[in-house]
Length: 249
Image (tube, rainbow, N blue to C red; front, top):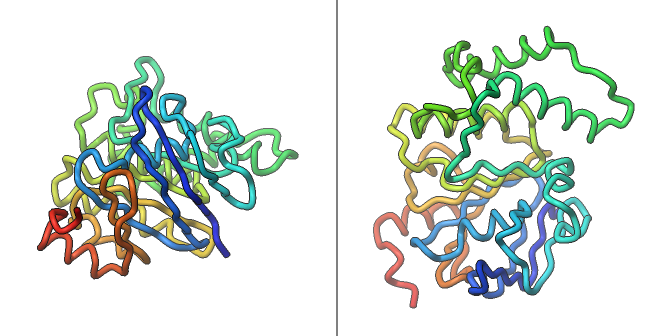
Protein backbone atom coordinates (compact mmCIF):
# COMPACT_ATOMS: atom_id res chain seq x y z
CA UNK A 1 0.00 0.00 0.00
CA UNK A 2 1.35 3.44 -0.91
CA UNK A 3 1.97 5.49 2.22
CA UNK A 4 3.16 8.72 0.60
CA UNK A 5 2.13 9.67 -2.92
CA UNK A 6 3.42 12.83 -4.62
CA UNK A 7 2.31 13.91 -8.09
CA UNK A 8 3.56 16.87 -10.09
CA UNK A 9 4.79 18.75 -7.03
CA UNK A 10 6.13 22.29 -7.50
CA UNK A 11 7.57 24.27 -4.57
CA UNK A 12 8.89 27.83 -4.38
CA UNK A 13 11.04 29.53 -1.75
CA UNK A 14 10.99 33.34 -1.50
CA UNK A 15 9.36 33.49 -4.91
CA UNK A 16 11.91 31.24 -6.63
CA UNK A 17 10.82 27.84 -7.92
CA UNK A 18 13.01 25.10 -6.44
CA UNK A 19 10.97 21.91 -6.97
CA UNK A 20 9.92 21.67 -10.60
CA UNK A 21 7.50 18.78 -10.83
CA UNK A 22 8.19 15.68 -8.74
CA UNK A 23 6.40 12.34 -8.81
CA UNK A 24 7.25 10.00 -5.94
CA UNK A 25 5.66 6.93 -4.35
CA UNK A 26 6.83 5.61 -0.97
CA UNK A 27 5.03 2.37 -0.02
CA UNK A 28 4.23 1.54 3.57
CA UNK A 29 7.18 -0.03 5.33
CA UNK A 30 9.85 1.20 2.92
CA UNK A 31 12.87 3.46 3.43
CA UNK A 32 13.81 5.66 0.46
CA UNK A 33 16.90 7.82 0.02
CA UNK A 34 16.95 11.15 -1.80
CA UNK A 35 20.45 11.98 -3.10
CA UNK A 36 21.76 14.87 -5.13
CA UNK A 37 24.16 17.82 -5.19
CA UNK A 38 23.76 21.05 -3.22
CA UNK A 39 20.84 23.14 -4.42
CA UNK A 40 19.02 20.27 -6.08
CA UNK A 41 15.90 20.68 -3.90
CA UNK A 42 16.26 17.76 -1.50
CA UNK A 43 15.78 19.77 1.71
CA UNK A 44 13.07 21.85 0.06
CA UNK A 45 11.09 18.68 -0.62
CA UNK A 46 11.06 17.38 2.96
CA UNK A 47 10.43 20.82 4.47
CA UNK A 48 7.48 21.34 2.15
CA UNK A 49 6.06 17.94 3.12
CA UNK A 50 6.40 18.85 6.81
CA UNK A 51 4.56 22.13 6.21
CA UNK A 52 7.29 24.72 6.78
CA UNK A 53 5.61 28.06 5.88
CA UNK A 54 8.63 29.34 3.92
CA UNK A 55 8.22 26.52 1.38
CA UNK A 56 5.20 27.35 -0.77
CA UNK A 57 3.57 24.59 -2.82
CA UNK A 58 2.53 26.11 -6.16
CA UNK A 59 1.32 22.98 -7.91
CA UNK A 60 0.76 19.25 -7.62
CA UNK A 61 -0.58 16.98 -4.90
CA UNK A 62 0.73 15.03 -1.92
CA UNK A 63 -1.31 12.28 -0.28
CA UNK A 64 -0.28 10.69 3.00
CA UNK A 65 -2.19 7.87 4.70
CA UNK A 66 -5.05 8.57 2.26
CA UNK A 67 -5.30 12.21 3.32
CA UNK A 68 -4.56 15.42 1.42
CA UNK A 69 -1.29 16.31 3.11
CA UNK A 70 -1.12 19.80 1.62
CA UNK A 71 -4.48 20.76 3.16
CA UNK A 72 -3.16 20.16 6.68
CA UNK A 73 -1.40 22.61 9.00
CA UNK A 74 2.11 21.65 10.20
CA UNK A 75 0.86 20.53 13.63
CA UNK A 76 -1.84 18.43 11.98
CA UNK A 77 0.79 16.71 9.83
CA UNK A 78 2.81 15.98 12.97
CA UNK A 79 -0.24 14.52 14.68
CA UNK A 80 -0.82 12.36 11.62
CA UNK A 81 2.58 10.83 12.24
CA UNK A 82 5.03 12.87 10.15
CA UNK A 83 8.38 13.61 11.79
CA UNK A 84 11.04 15.96 10.42
CA UNK A 85 14.64 15.62 11.62
CA UNK A 86 16.02 19.02 10.68
CA UNK A 87 19.35 19.68 9.03
CA UNK A 88 19.99 22.47 11.53
CA UNK A 89 18.08 21.72 14.76
CA UNK A 90 17.06 24.79 16.77
CA UNK A 91 18.10 25.54 20.35
CA UNK A 92 15.41 25.94 23.01
CA UNK A 93 16.96 27.55 26.06
CA UNK A 94 15.39 26.82 29.44
CA UNK A 95 13.52 23.68 28.32
CA UNK A 96 15.16 20.38 29.13
CA UNK A 97 15.20 17.68 26.49
CA UNK A 98 13.34 15.41 28.94
CA UNK A 99 10.49 17.93 29.38
CA UNK A 100 10.36 18.57 25.64
CA UNK A 101 10.15 14.86 24.82
CA UNK A 102 7.52 14.19 27.49
CA UNK A 103 5.30 17.03 26.20
CA UNK A 104 5.70 15.85 22.59
CA UNK A 105 5.00 12.25 23.59
CA UNK A 106 1.76 13.20 25.39
CA UNK A 107 0.62 15.29 22.41
CA UNK A 108 1.20 12.35 20.05
CA UNK A 109 -0.63 9.93 22.32
CA UNK A 110 -3.66 12.23 22.44
CA UNK A 111 -3.62 12.54 18.64
CA UNK A 112 -3.53 8.77 18.19
CA UNK A 113 -6.07 7.94 20.91
CA UNK A 114 -8.77 10.52 21.80
CA UNK A 115 -9.50 8.60 25.02
CA UNK A 116 -5.93 9.12 26.22
CA UNK A 117 -5.92 11.35 29.30
CA UNK A 118 -2.52 11.15 30.99
CA UNK A 119 0.94 9.63 30.78
CA UNK A 120 2.83 8.23 33.72
CA UNK A 121 6.13 10.11 34.24
CA UNK A 122 7.59 6.92 35.72
CA UNK A 123 6.69 4.79 32.69
CA UNK A 124 7.93 7.51 30.36
CA UNK A 125 11.23 7.67 32.25
CA UNK A 126 11.65 3.90 31.84
CA UNK A 127 10.90 4.09 28.11
CA UNK A 128 13.22 7.07 27.64
CA UNK A 129 16.10 5.37 29.41
CA UNK A 130 15.59 2.23 27.32
CA UNK A 131 15.79 4.21 24.08
CA UNK A 132 18.84 6.11 25.30
CA UNK A 133 20.66 2.89 26.14
CA UNK A 134 19.91 1.64 22.63
CA UNK A 135 21.47 4.81 21.24
CA UNK A 136 24.43 4.64 23.67
CA UNK A 137 23.50 8.01 25.18
CA UNK A 138 24.34 9.22 28.69
CA UNK A 139 21.08 9.57 30.74
CA UNK A 140 22.29 13.00 31.91
CA UNK A 141 21.98 14.19 28.31
CA UNK A 142 18.22 14.74 28.65
CA UNK A 143 18.64 17.11 31.59
CA UNK A 144 20.26 19.71 29.30
CA UNK A 145 18.31 22.42 27.47
CA UNK A 146 17.18 21.32 24.02
CA UNK A 147 20.22 21.54 21.70
CA UNK A 148 21.77 24.28 23.88
CA UNK A 149 25.52 23.87 23.69
CA UNK A 150 25.14 20.56 21.86
CA UNK A 151 27.75 19.57 19.30
CA UNK A 152 26.55 18.83 15.78
CA UNK A 153 26.63 15.11 16.50
CA UNK A 154 24.73 15.54 19.77
CA UNK A 155 22.01 17.50 18.00
CA UNK A 156 21.57 14.72 15.45
CA UNK A 157 21.47 12.08 18.20
CA UNK A 158 18.80 14.13 19.99
CA UNK A 159 16.74 14.21 16.78
CA UNK A 160 16.96 10.43 16.44
CA UNK A 161 16.02 10.03 20.11
CA UNK A 162 12.91 12.13 19.46
CA UNK A 163 12.04 9.88 16.53
CA UNK A 164 12.44 6.74 18.63
CA UNK A 165 10.21 8.18 21.36
CA UNK A 166 7.47 9.52 19.08
CA UNK A 167 7.49 6.52 16.72
CA UNK A 168 6.23 8.36 13.63
CA UNK A 169 4.57 6.74 10.64
CA UNK A 170 6.80 8.73 8.25
CA UNK A 171 10.24 10.10 9.11
CA UNK A 172 11.76 12.83 6.96
CA UNK A 173 15.49 12.88 7.74
CA UNK A 174 17.15 15.99 6.34
CA UNK A 175 20.89 15.28 6.14
CA UNK A 176 20.92 13.59 9.54
CA UNK A 177 24.39 12.26 8.69
CA UNK A 178 25.89 15.72 8.14
CA UNK A 179 28.99 16.36 10.24
CA UNK A 180 28.93 13.03 12.08
CA UNK A 181 31.98 10.96 12.88
CA UNK A 182 31.83 7.22 12.19
CA UNK A 183 30.73 6.25 15.72
CA UNK A 184 27.94 8.84 15.80
CA UNK A 185 26.88 7.85 12.29
CA UNK A 186 26.49 4.24 13.38
CA UNK A 187 24.41 5.28 16.38
CA UNK A 188 22.09 7.36 14.20
CA UNK A 189 21.80 4.49 11.70
CA UNK A 190 21.05 2.03 14.50
CA UNK A 191 18.20 4.27 15.64
CA UNK A 192 16.69 4.41 12.17
CA UNK A 193 17.10 0.67 11.64
CA UNK A 194 15.41 -0.04 14.98
CA UNK A 195 12.36 1.87 13.71
CA UNK A 196 11.99 -0.18 10.53
CA UNK A 197 8.72 -2.09 10.46
CA UNK A 198 5.69 -2.74 8.30
CA UNK A 199 4.09 0.48 9.64
CA UNK A 200 7.07 2.85 9.31
CA UNK A 201 8.36 4.65 6.23
CA UNK A 202 11.21 7.11 5.79
CA UNK A 203 12.77 9.55 3.35
CA UNK A 204 16.49 10.02 4.00
CA UNK A 205 18.02 13.11 2.41
CA UNK A 206 21.78 12.88 1.96
CA UNK A 207 24.66 14.04 -0.24
CA UNK A 208 26.76 10.94 0.20
CA UNK A 209 26.29 7.19 0.33
CA UNK A 210 28.11 6.96 3.68
CA UNK A 211 25.00 6.59 5.85
CA UNK A 212 23.54 4.14 3.33
CA UNK A 213 26.37 1.75 4.20
CA UNK A 214 24.52 1.27 7.51
CA UNK A 215 20.92 1.83 6.40
CA UNK A 216 19.99 -0.17 3.31
CA UNK A 217 17.31 1.76 1.40
CA UNK A 218 14.56 0.05 -0.55
CA UNK A 219 14.87 2.73 -3.24
CA UNK A 220 17.29 5.53 -4.10
CA UNK A 221 16.19 8.64 -6.00
CA UNK A 222 18.54 11.19 -7.57
CA UNK A 223 17.48 14.84 -7.56
CA UNK A 224 18.99 17.55 -9.70
CA UNK A 225 17.55 20.88 -10.74
CA UNK A 226 14.41 20.34 -8.70
CA UNK A 227 13.47 17.07 -10.40
CA UNK A 228 14.00 13.37 -9.83
CA UNK A 229 16.28 12.36 -12.69
CA UNK A 230 16.85 8.69 -11.82
CA UNK A 231 15.57 6.04 -9.40
CA UNK A 232 16.92 2.61 -8.56
CA UNK A 233 17.90 0.17 -5.87
CA UNK A 234 20.57 0.44 -3.20
CA UNK A 235 23.29 -0.12 -5.82
CA UNK A 236 22.51 3.30 -7.29
CA UNK A 237 23.92 4.96 -4.16
CA UNK A 238 27.23 3.17 -4.60
CA UNK A 239 27.31 4.17 -8.26
CA UNK A 240 26.79 7.81 -7.30
CA UNK A 241 29.57 7.62 -4.74
CA UNK A 242 31.97 6.57 -7.50
CA UNK A 243 30.70 8.64 -10.41
CA UNK A 244 29.13 11.72 -8.79
CA UNK A 245 26.32 13.81 -10.23
CA UNK A 246 28.02 15.32 -13.30
CA UNK A 247 26.51 12.55 -15.42
CA UNK A 248 23.12 14.24 -15.08
CA UNK A 249 22.60 17.21 -17.37
